[in-house]
Image (tube, rainbow, N blue to C red; front, top):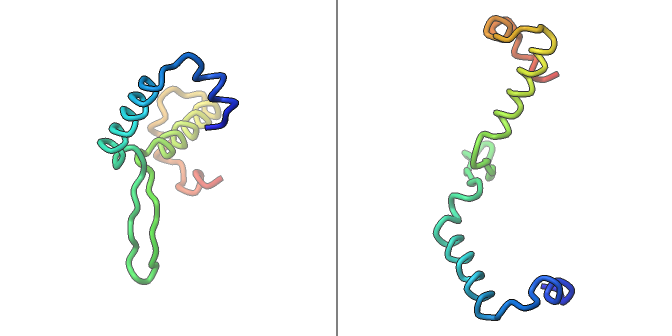
Length: 94
């Protein structure tokens, strides 16, 4: 930690309180660390290597939400069932 932050943010904080806060964070990371980030998948020999996979599908859900929003603006319909059924798969690539 730089002295600039130490003097500005930690002024008046007793050392034992800071140590307790750091220990709490470290215990949390030890307990929940494997679940906080994505995971690595080893690929079969032809592709060989490791791919890092996101922990959630939030990126995919966001992309689909933006696609639906654009389709609603284009068509003016509230229910997109029929529109999405007839939408070609390549539309997502544009």
